[in-house]
Amino acid sequence: MRLSEILKMRWKDINFRLGTIRIPKENSKSKKERVIPIDSVIYNVLDSLAEKGKYVFVNDLTGKRRMDIRKAFKSACKRAEIPHGREKGLTFHDLRHLAAYRLVKLTDIVTASKILGHSDVKMTMRYVHPSDKDKKLAIEKSSEILFQSRQFPVNGKKTTALKELENRYKIN
Image (cartoon, rainbow, N blue to C red):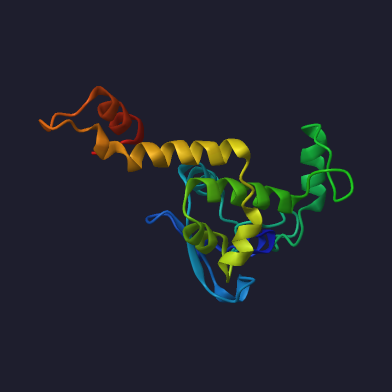
């Protein structure tokens, strides 16, 4: 999620039963509502928070919605000894960029684009940075799967190589 989407998140937008967060169109950069799934870690963190108002992230002193996290982010980076700031190192948006980079490695580009809230797949393509190792692994996996039918002898019995492929990639 974008920082603005996180800071504007309301309790009513979290569906714990379905494990999703709804981002209303008025809080979305693309002005389109989207629903994103959450994993068990985020679920547990959100479930452990006390509801102190209609917004999830509120200022404990004022009770109002948090508008900024720059000081907290800077402090967290200092404690972790991570260089921070546009000029020196890590920014909050870099975390979204890293999550997007990893997401496009795990799923297809269209699904990643929908989760990230991009209005166009071209925007998501900015997060795709395949390394030589990534390309080599992709070719190896695809060739193993494409040519697995050649692993069947005439009598129809599976070879050891095919059984290993099926186990490795959970193919049946």
